[in-house]
Length: 500
Image 1 (cartoon, rainbow, N blue to C red):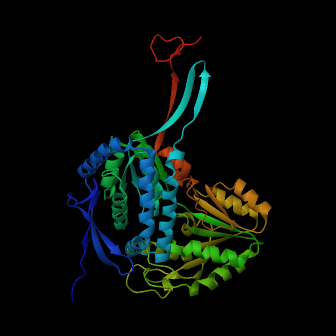
Image 2 (image 1 turned 120 degrees about the vertical axis):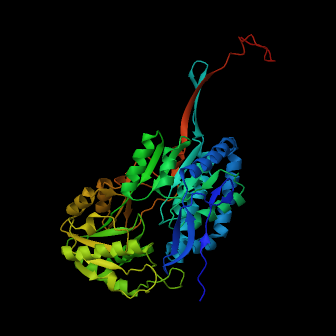
Image 3 (image 1 turned 90 degrees about the vertical axis):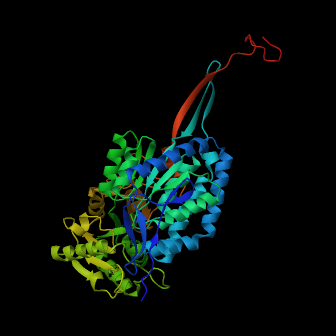
């Protein structure tokens, strides 16, 4: 019997793969089998410093490149990413575990951000005021920051880096990516596409690592800004340490997304949407629906409709045709999520469908879909971000009670309402204290020409991700006030007749 080989991964520095030198590594697993498939280096502070120095040199050259050249690179990158999306999706599925259709969807949403960034000549246009004072003109420009860093999560190893790097590079910065060590191979694939697209060496860097690498980026004098997506405790840490070091920081945290279902809702449509949003990608999405808030008498019908749909879903390896939900990212996380189901049952929640008892593959990090009814706000299954295939149903008597419940939650990333009543929907969108709202849309992720971000403990900093706010985050404004000598009175010979 032969032991499957383990691939040794590298960093990507100055346009080429560079082996790690710290002596520290982490395993990368196929979550569908539990088998280790790769070994990723964990960078030391010294390796971070060396990588950033190459990025500093590259940034000085890249910022002088014309907008048309930057756009041309982005267009080329877009075409490569589009043409090779199947290869990239397979890499994502192999290391994250999500089904191929989810992986392809992730790439498509990332591609939208690249397409937005190709419009950089338009996006970086400033303003101009002639004769702000006599003989004085004033105009504004936006300039790149220099070297910026992205620290990205395991759940979207392609989309989230593209949220950041497309705009950052378009704006004239060099970008240093520190991906999750759980599924790092997609970032190296992106690096190769950037190089093939004509991006100069050093403008896009991939450096793998854990907390030591993160701290080195946050402390490095040459890193001007840090963009982060992850859990709330880490987002708070990133924001506080980064800003303490004088950096610009946007840190997106956790979520506990609610769907408010009114009695007049189309139950079949709502159930289909909630099942997809709660259990897609095994619930490992920052925009996954975690709580269905059933108003009035709709609870029984909603729970019945959701539970009736779950037996038809197939749990298995994401690479296999017909699979609806893949494994979770690690064995430890799988066991943690199962623990929440146990805690919910012990606290008095009704276990309508128990994912721990579902028939799933014995190998790998699989857990079935769980539906809990009669959940109350004091239970850990309600309070905590579970990040797994667990949906809680909370029952309330009125619209006002449901709205108050959502507004009282510490997380405010995304929410949705299901109703046929336009007045109720309009009131909900106006009064709900959440950053992204869906009306009969379960996962209201904004298109690329808007910006992504929540409120409260779901966002640290005041800038949302990608879109127009992303352009502003990766640039800084400058206002120029200018006056030129009047050629009619100047003593300098300008080569044309003077007039009075």
